Image 1 (cartoon, helix red, strand yellow):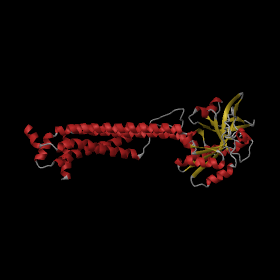
Image 2 (cartoon, rainbow, N blue to C red):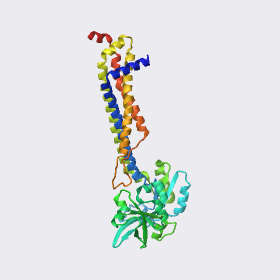
Image 3 (spheres, rainbow, N blue to C red):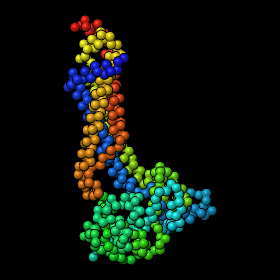
Image 4 (tube, helix red, strand yellow):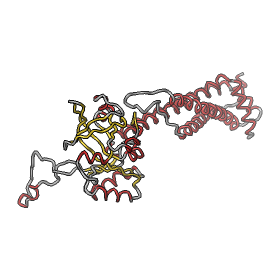
Length: 419
């Protein structure tokens, strides 16, 4: 088998039918290009939505949950031990909001190798005061720089910065919804009140917008010492501990371990976002299904074109066989044609897909719900491009293989006699 000669014949066949060859290559181009665009856009969108939720969610959240006592006093009475006990209108047990021994727990967790970040918080329920107006408030006392590092807080600040909050002891990152209702802006002062009745005037150093109105209307960030001051508590008063670990899949197991060890409620990220993760998985599955369908349709188009090409080349096949080419040689001539179409069309498809992805990535996308997002999200993962070119070669190989099997079995005598 003279590979160079077979390749030369294949190239001649393609060039003598330029229109059909171009149509076949364009079928691959648009199939692969559409696949690249679809996967880049859909997974970019999934990444954006995942980031909005998961970036703001700790892998493990430690806190004291208000809930009824697991064992009621009546169940401890021995004479009722073997009886069915029915207790109605159970009231939640009295629990402290603060985590007991929070500072030693933080020190212990910081030494564990699977933990990459710990962010303590102090949550304060209260009000924003503006003249006769009172708005419900949830002020979160936190370390702004840790929130920026582990939860991308800076990406949700539309005015000001985390650094300004660090510099200002009596500062506040106010939710944009609350700021709008109180007609306040950066540099103004807002009075806040906690449930203890303590009223403090805080300087607005930035505006925070999560993209969720119910959060932006109430939530704000202050420094931890300020939150403790609002509650009239000491420096060891911590209501929440947020934990980031190096392996997300270990979160449920570690959460259960910490809950039992420290007698607190521990919620892992999978439990907290179970519904969201289901939706994300379904969106990913749909994008793959649509993309694979596009590639298969392109493969059938190539098969039909090559099949017709072989029927048009019957005389050429007869001449090739009559001059000494074997059926195997003829088969590889047509397979090589298909592979050339796949390589050229696939390469053009990658270029087309990347070009349109860049265009989409630079298209303005502005919404009040996502103030920090300026353009449509695109995922440029190299794996999509590798899959695209590999599939184009595989699809065109089989699209050329089955018609070429017919060409391999053609008897040149029958064709010449028919002429």
